[in-house]
Image 1 (cartoon, one colour):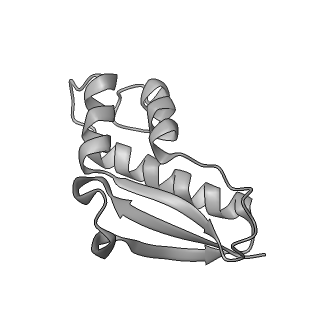
Image 2 (cartoon, one colour):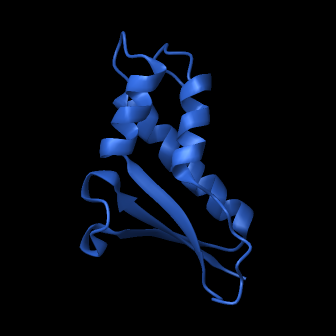
Amino acid sequence: MPYKVMIDDNFHFGRGDERNEHGVFSSAEEAIAACKRIVDEDLKNSYRPGMSEAELYETYTMFGDDPFVMPIDKADKSITFSAWDYAKERCKAFGFSGTEG
């Protein structure tokens, strides 16, 4: 069953006209992996030397991409992924070296 990854823009939170489709994936696992890559890339691009974990997370929640998974079959309610929760965990693991941790 296919799953669509959509991206909201945290800077324009709640504005449907700022939502973009990232792609359609054949499994929930692939769709979630795509969401994680989007968040990881956003964190990597947002990081600045001297930034704390809290500052990186705040920058993400204010300006980053907020991907989510939508099952094509509306009856499938099994997808649970929070980009904000994932970003918070990644900020802890980031290592603040300018690369993924």
